[in-house]
Image (cartoon, rainbow, N blue to C red; front, side, top):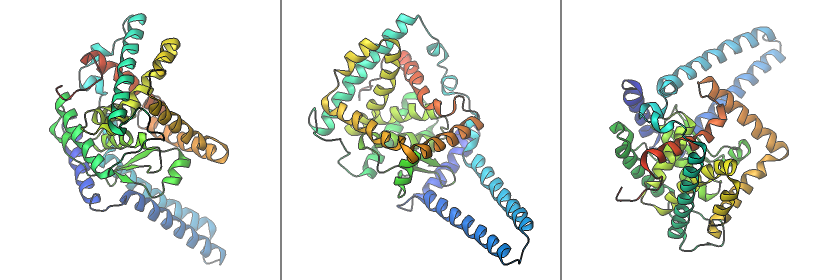
Length: 355
């Protein structure tokens, strides 16, 4: 925790982000393309030698396997040196000594607490939608009106406040460079990926084609990974905090919308009638954004795209479980628990400047 997560790991991540941040485009995306082209070239060359009987097939496969294995080991070693060791950190609840708030109370009391927080989140989401768009219904799915690089800077300000609020190591507040839009976002759509962190370059990358209401939160989520947060539920939690502690109304709206949807999902399991009542309180524009967001990703659940998405989720599930993340891809939803834990500790999830 002290030597790596708040020491060497932070320094390496910041250094990589500083170097890669000199480029306006994603260096990580470029490296992935170059690696794929190199593998195709090497494989094609080997096939050519075998086809012209200049090399035996068994020899070509064996040598290719050895080279590929060596390359894989180097990439894996760099992964753990640069970032991957953070998977072995204690959970956030333990790091922050929040165990008493993580204990479940009486079912009725827990449901009431969930309901009250959902009610506050619906109101906060509405208020920030109004502040960002100037109306209760923008008339079309909302988008961030300014430059994304400016939004990125506002999220960094949010992280400065998160560091102070949670009394985290000072390195947590330092900027890591702006998040990068991915040129191959069409491919990310089919893989059903909204963003990813590339630890070999220290870059936060996001799908530029996804609905605007989710982009600030996705950027904040990936920028949590830049700060040595590996667990997806913790990255969701920190992404929510950074967005809602921002001075930008649209960033706050995106963060509150994420938390509202997560906690309302939990409330529907426990008290569907009151959950439906809260849905009725959403501004029409907020509901439009939710409907658009759902419809956008549902397009990639059908046919070949759906199979590609399932394969992508399966790979991510194996990756997370291999690195000790219980539940695999299900861990994305566990941030609802962290939100409730923090609400118990603080009394509310709603942040005001004077806090």
